[in-house]
Length: 258
Image 1 (tube, rainbow, N blue to C red):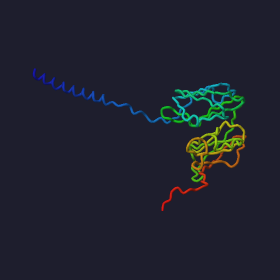
Image 2 (cartoon, rainbow, N blue to C red):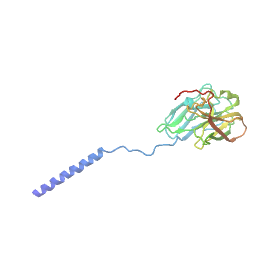
Image 3 (cartoon, helix red, strand yellow):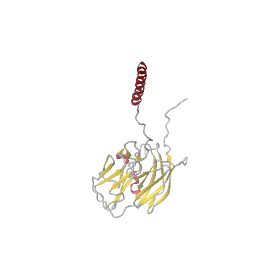
């Protein structure tokens, strides 16, 4: 009988020990660290009306994405061409972006809404670059394009995220004073393409800027341009823009050491 009691005594402490280990392991459970960081830009699921719609007569556009999106710096990043006296109202909610027009649209006109870097996903801030929504209130959509590349004039390096914009020569006096409506940014290979342009005469510029306002702010920024006017009556490619820093006209001594 004494032998049996001794066995029970040895078993019970063993159970207590393993139960304690179980409780400790449960208490130390940590939250999952998650997978790799999301680096994919938002994807457009649906556009109502569809992009490149002709005979457009709506007062609102709805664009649906595959994830929650947000707008950033919409007043500086988003542009409409031709410009409107009362700009559209942009609202992002969950997966939906709504655009409402506050004034009547011109007849037989191709409109381009360029979002620049305004659209990004909510979680990681991945930007949907160079997205444009194009429509026409008439039967035709302007379809001409200008494409090329941007390089550094000294190093010959191809430059990414450089703003390329055009101005009709009738508006060229606006250079350095007002944001351009027709613009895009270069990709990782320094290439760019401006699409859905009307037949006209343009000047083209490349701006490696700091502030992101699409306005040349002097010799702190790199600028490039073509001397000749582009007479756009067909698709134009192989444009090469070499950016450089303008040499200051006045040199000042800000510090003197002997």
